[in-house]
Image 1 (tube, rainbow, N blue to C red):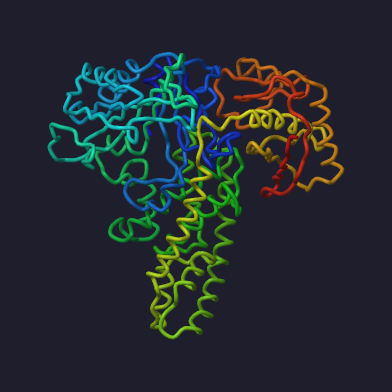
Image 2 (image 1 turned 180 degrees about the vertical axis):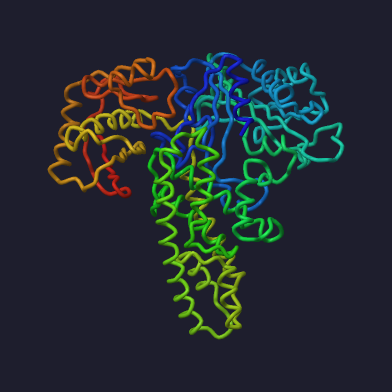
Length: 584
């Protein structure tokens, strides 16, 4: 954890302002279930909106990626991870960014220069070779043999959509091996691992495919805490670093099994998943296990953890997960204070899912008893996959049970069905996880503003307890989650809808002001996920109806919104209601 503090202190010494980590759930971004990189919450500012804290920013950001879920269990992959980042919003550029990265690695972290190599963009028919970055690296002492020139697939970022900001990047590699460091850098040599990426948003790509230099050029960097920690501690297995070792040791103690052989995968999955579970359930976005979106992922993580706990002969009705959760909370609450505040919620989420899954397992065992009465020698792939998909049975458990009855399992057929299932999930995930700088449209902006009006109207109709517990905006509709113990009546829905339309007809101006956070709170400005905001905040005023902390963007006047219509009011989770609405 010390590396996070060193990183923040270093860049503060370079006149950066520290940002608090945003929620792990994107704010008003329909393209992603989770924040997957440090830059994601900063999209409006990378697009040109002034940031209240200025042009130099630094933080560590809570991130989560589903693309690696099936890889969890190896030495290096994680679902939840932390990303260190520093940004220049139209201030410094390549020279300072590269020099400071080099200084932090070699002076603050004391990494030998001889262990480092870099890649830069080799150029193409549209954009010239990035000799500027290469020249800076050479001046710092990186030899020509340690600089590799690679193409767009390796050293180019963006644009996020068809058009927009984009540019070359330079990646820093560390030679993670006890072998003698090679004189020349070979990017294909797996002993070289990437530790830091500096992206230079240098160009704008237009609809004709032309690249022109941006007037305001940004720097966006990212370095994973888990990977740099493994480098600094000299281990190849991330789970043997100080980040994970206390959890792994506790699992060893609980199971009375060593962290070796076949036990490693299960222990890594339990450790990884319990950390992700704590972070998601402890986030102020109020995510609860469900069958959709982030809630589905949370449920899947808990049940997958419990399956692997059973594999290690842990009683999954015991409090083992709560003990591990307490350890994670203790380790991270100094960085994310919401974990201590939501500690009991986290534990209740885990307990409830444990209870539900225990019952599911029992049902699955009964289903297995039915299956074996219908087969002679082999449990077929369809039944094996049903036990997995419906009842959460890993194929190993099905094989173990079948063996007791001298039966075999069509594991190859199961793997085929599993791959088909993965492919369908992957295709859906690819659609869901396309995100970035292109997601803000005119309709998106209108729905963003309408969300503020809806929040204000709900307070008027239901009471002051209403506040944002989550929102999701697309070009077609808005979705708003808020606390309320009962379903809204038809009269309450109609009154809320009418109020929003009244606000729109009043042609209220939407005004943006920057001010100290304390002043904003004193004047009654409302803040969802307040911990993510720094000392200076952006507040949007909509007439006398609404004043909220927000990163924007918004329309200039409510008259631009059209007509507001609530199309659905439903339960989101316990004590949380959800409204879906459209503008026409």
